[in-house]
Amino acid sequence: MAINFANEPANQLRASGVRLLNQADVDNSGAHTITITGIPSEATKIYVMFMNWSTDNGTSQRMKMRVGHGSGSAINSSSVYDWTTQYVADASSSAHYTHDASYWSILDESHTGGAHADSGLITLTRMTHTSSSGNGGWMFTCQAGDTTRRLHYCSTGRWDANTGINTVQFFNSGNEGYDAGARMIVCYEMGDYY
Image (cartoon, rainbow, N blue to C red; front, side):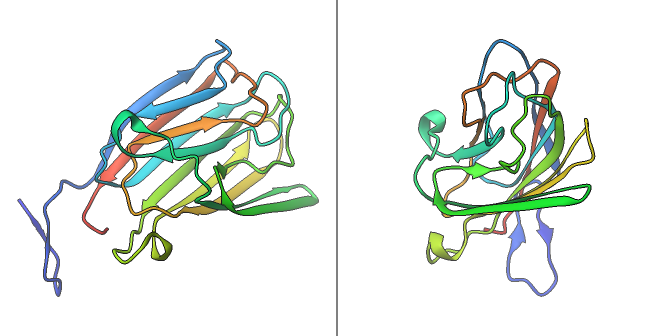
């Protein structure tokens, strides 16, 4: 059954609503990269919830993200990611940004300690313009907090691509293993607004 929108010449034919894809226990096996596959290429929103995210030892950029599309869930590591991060803590704050990077930085790089335990929500939204990737792509936002201290993170960015996403990947700069007790849940929404 189609969903009809007033004053629109088209009907939405794909099912709507949020669907659970995966829930994962991030264990202490020494893994420093976590890859989630199976996201439908026609998804228009992807949600990643993470809880108690921490590393074995301190490292800069404790949470980076890349995405991919295509056969074999190929991860895109080209220089097509733009991002900015910020943190606010008690009486201090900082911000970082980059353009044409090979990844998104999710948690601000100023906080590097392995004792951090961060929880938050990442939202990826497809806003692709049919003329070119330079006029659309995927936007991401993240709101997160450190459960061990008064610390708030926010970040945002864009992936310059006109394709869907079927894979998300998380890693850190120092190849530090992720700690036991961390959890990750991935959900997605379908739609016709791309």
